[in-house]
Image 1 (cartoon, rainbow, N blue to C red):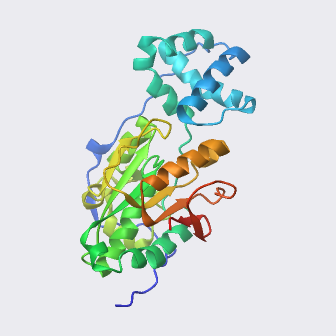
Image 2 (cartoon, rainbow, N blue to C red):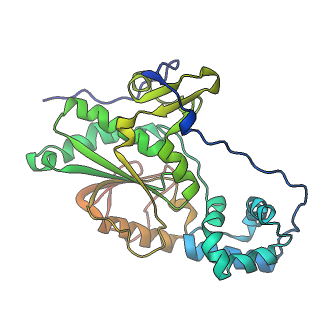
Image 3 (cartoon, rainbow, N blue to C red):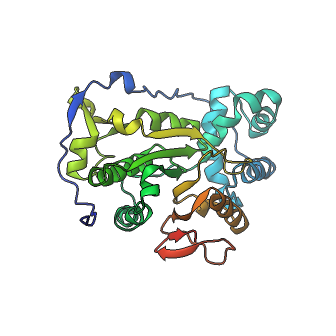
Length: 313
């Protein structure tokens, strides 16, 4: 059976499948504005924090990022009523702080930029080339196709993948898939599980996909939409730190999307991480990286098959 090439059409005005009341799915985010401003971060405190962040999260934190780190952590100091970064470090690395504050610190220092259909050529290549090849045999169709969105942020990437794979399933009814979506930040994972976005955020979603896969709030003034339950049920979200032990995967992956993540790591960490990805990838599986990322110079068992797309032989 021949399939039409998949193309991501230009987004059209917002039309959605059905209206739904999203009041229960919204989170009121109120930041307490406290007048006292903590003292600045000195070099000793920055060194202490930056070394820990790089060791714990793999994120490079050179001196040029001192101002950024100080700015992002100011809110945490104000929330605890702490006046200096030395006090904050002492609290953070205490048994109490390790238990209560560590996850929140990691949340605020990680970068979570993402979009629906970001780098659209990847999704066209997935639909037109990768899926038909991987699903060509009966044995392949009989099992569940496994996809991992590694560094999923607030969910735009894994939900884009559910739309693309659902479109493919319409033409291949026996096709089954499941998506694992992971991130180090509990804050963004909470938002991703809700699957609620403002209308501007879903702008890149093609018109027909908006009609099929998005629900609009009954209160139009809120300008909110939600991913339909059928798609949300196909994504399994969980917290994962790339620097910690085994990934805990039960099934090998057919596809791994890890885009605009490894750019924050040094080359040695990149090589180690990609080799670990490959251990959890089926032969013939594919790794998709961000447009500014490359495996050139890394000792990894992958071959390039398209711009920033790599295949495990």
